[in-house]
Length: 483
Ligand code: GLN
Image (cartoon, rainbow, N blue to C red):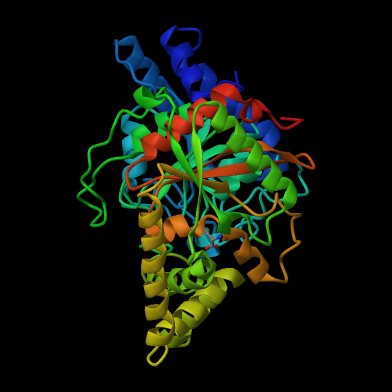
């Protein structure tokens, strides 16, 4: 039963082949048996899951239908969940139980999804390897010595290991697409504003966006449908109609114009990954797509701009964790300053502290113009590059990451080498565009992802292309040995 996709589960539940309660019990037992190898969950909510599963079964018995009704999922541990620990993988929030559900959590629960628990992640979503978690590193099910990517590494490892069919993630600079690529999943970062950020603990508010991680594009369509939509509680949510993603997966790719930017294939890309990406281009050509070489000339500035903007916003967002209102508080503070200083020094890990320092520096008087303002200007140039490219092409294609998953610990002494792994993903966040990563093959037994980018609100186009590709390839069906 654990091999079933969301789409297959929906059919099985509708045909009464099994109940949501049976499925939920099976998966909870599988998590108990296998997750000690992976560390993909921070909190399991068995009782809540069984309660939600029984409620979903009762709703189906009453004639209700719906692709998510009774479907098991899990949430990255930065979505607030009422009465359940929401830790952001930080000691700072180890004792924090959210007083409300995030919009994404509430919407999926209303659609009947069954939440099995909260998945591991990089602390405050800062990272690309899921090594900065207070609860320990997550292992990649394809090779337990390697990272699963980050920051949504727990969601990715759990879905890749068939502990559950799909999970939520968030993507500020690649944190859905990159772990999807490194674990052989399909992951989608929607257009900025498509999915509500209300109740998502903020990292960099102008970049953060929630989306689905699953094995197939078909399943991403189902999960995104339950997540997307205007939310008046999020001032950056956009009131744009949400199409029926599942109904639009079968469009023909005949004549689809795919732009391939030269900058995505420059120095730093593993040649074996380049070859797999070229194979996937050939596959799409067979389906009728037309390839056009394009250029995104300002891409080289994306990493420096991102690593100013994201830490700047993080330093501001994380100022709310002061040891006073919620979260970790140090013992026996001498005075208020001592309380702030020690609570934050004890509560935040090294990567989070590094980002707060960088961000506070970039925002300080005298440096604001030199760093933050410059970075915002680069952001506009990057967006303009995309706008020009999308006059000529329907989607843009390239690798998701320059390298396959690295060994746990390999980049610990060199944070900048980890930042460089985001080179292909962060432009979409800076521009606010939707992006998807899907399986494209293997290098040394480790999965490789191909990335698709589309104009604003064209998630449906990404899912359509990915679904057609998956009908003609079988990379996404491979599962890791031992799981
Ligand atoms: N790796 C990037 C960072 O560390 C992106 C993380 C994310 O998307 N949350 O900031």
